[in-house]
Each structure stands twice: as C-alpha cells, then as structure tokens.
Image 1 (tube, one colour):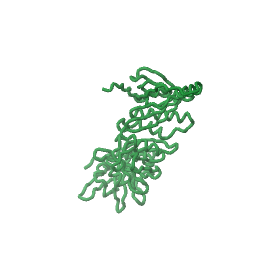
Image 2 (cartoon, rainbow, N blue to C red; image 1 turned 90 degrees about the vertical axis):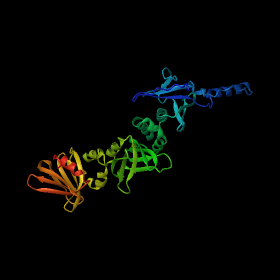
Image 3 (tube, rainbow, N blue to C red; image 1 turned 60 degrees about the horizontal axis):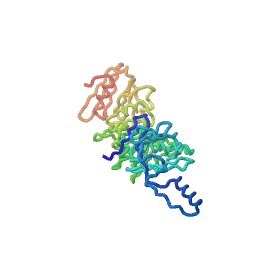
Image 4 (tube, rainbow, N blue to C red; image 1 turned 30 degrees about the horizontal axis):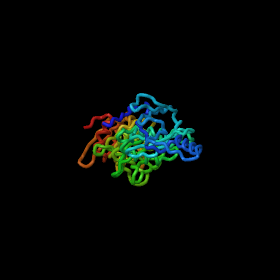
Length: 393
C-alpha cells in the first residue's frame, strides 16, 4: 500500500472533489523579493537560503483534497474531512500547464499577492472536471466568454460513464477544440469510426466526431443531414447518418447504447410522430430501405397523430410506403397522390405470403378492396395487419 488517502468521490449533484499534491518547486515570489531587498540593502550578495523541493508558494499542505461547489473552493486535508482553507470561486486564477493520461498540472496564482504555485493530480475525470471549472471561472473573471468546450466537458461529466471518460479523454479534448463561439453541445457519446475510437457530439449547429489523433475529424452541419437511424450490430449499437449529398456515415459502438436512440430522435430534421417510431426501431433495415419514401410521409401526419408501423408496398405499378397510424392507413407513392383510409372504414385486413411476394388485402365498408403487393420487409405485413387491429392469418 502507498499510504495515500483516497479522496471521497462526489455524489451526482454534490460538490466536486479530487486529490492533489504540491508540484515541483519553481520559485517563491515572496522569498525572491526578500532576497532582492536584502541584496540592495546590505550592498553585497547574501548567501541564498536552502530551498526545498516543495513549492511553498502555494502555502498548501503536501497532499490535500480540493472541493468545489456552486460558490466556493475549499482545501481539505488528505482524508477529505477537515477544511483547511477556502476562497470564493474565481478569486484565485487557475491555468492548466499539463494534461495527459497520467498527470494534470494546475498553476494557481492569488491575484495582488505574491502567493502562487503548481499543484498536481493523477489524471481522473474528477480532477479534469475540477480543473476545467477553475479555469473557466478564471476566464470569466477576466472578462473572457465562457468557452463552448466548458459546456461540453460538463455534459461529458454528467452523461458519460467514468471509464469511458478516462479512455477517451484525448478525443474529448479534441472535439472541445472544434466547437465554435456560442456553439451549444446537446448530446455526447462514445463512437468508433473505422478503427478509431472517438467521441460524437451533437450541437445546435452540427454533428461532430473525432478521435483526437490523426484520423480526420467529422463536421457535418445539421442542415445537411437528411435522416438518421440506429441499428444493433454484433451486440452493439451503430448510428447511420444520411447526408443530403454523399455516402452514409456510420458510427459504430455507440456508448452508452441508449444514446443511439437519443441521437436519432435529435438528428432527424423534423421531430414528429414518425421520428418517435423510428427512434424505437430495433432493426433499421426497413428504414434504410424506405427512408426516401418516408420523407414524403412527414408532411401528411397531423398534430398528435401517432405512427404505429410502416412497410414498403406497391399498388398497381407504383412503389410507395404504407404507414399505419392511430387514425388511418396511409399509402404514399414515390410519385402521385397518396391514399388515405380512415381506420373506421376498414372491415378486414389480411396478409398473404407467397413464394416471392407478400401481399396485404384491405376490405372496406363500402365493398371496395385495396390490394398492396411487394411488402418490404416481408415480415412487416403481419405488423401492419396487427396494427390495424386484425389477427394475422
């Protein structure tokens, strides 16, 4: 055992804590000033006093815990039990000098005083977040706008698992540098592109991804996104984004997995009843097959109308898509006028699966019959019939 006390971890919504220690000695500003005064007063050099390897300019103990809440920064003893010192947030300037996978170096300087020095922490999500908060407070005190990366780091701390935050710290820092002034981060998740594991961030302006290394970052403005879907692949969730121009973008291994559905809902240009249905889609093969036709359905859905299921279908020689809602059955062709059948007019619906094609017959109360062939995917025929309230034959 090293004998080093572990700082208690903060509970969600409570003060943020991280263990620190004094860093390598630079200089003591007060001590240096005293030497200069003595030199000038005595008239000849005064033998320098022996200086320790500790940076006493901070006037902090060798090991301690920093705690930050909404209004105050506190220095606790190494067990995190006793308060040794405190100051209002922003009263002490902070600057990150080094940040890598092992250590975080933080320079503290008390304004209008000779006190200052370096403190060090083992890199951890808590230490990173605490340092970012102190630096952000410093920037705000000096009149600088709060950088967009500060909001992203807070979002990361609140919504990503600790292990993922540690593993992707380089990617998080890289994406934070991509944010533009006043750009707002909304969702963040771990995501792989090709063989590179990085971070995907959805902002109010764009979809961003970067691994923080040599792999080229992704910047896709939201107004260039046509649609999105999530799909399970080998036990993991994959996000498929279709730009208005160019090839689909695939981001694999979305972490946490449920963030995939959140991204799909937010990425689709118009959040409506159809988006809600698509966000619940476990198998996106139907969406990928029919997305062009589904875009034509959106303007037809009324406020409050709930989409229940959908499938590709032909009527005569025209290709289209069938959508069952809580109010009606819609058939929307690629070209031409859609057909709307209120649910109250449907007496019976039946699916028939043949060797090549699957068909749905809909009998109406006035004696008419509507036939929809070539159901895609074929197993969706049973879903359509069931959504209309009829048992599959």
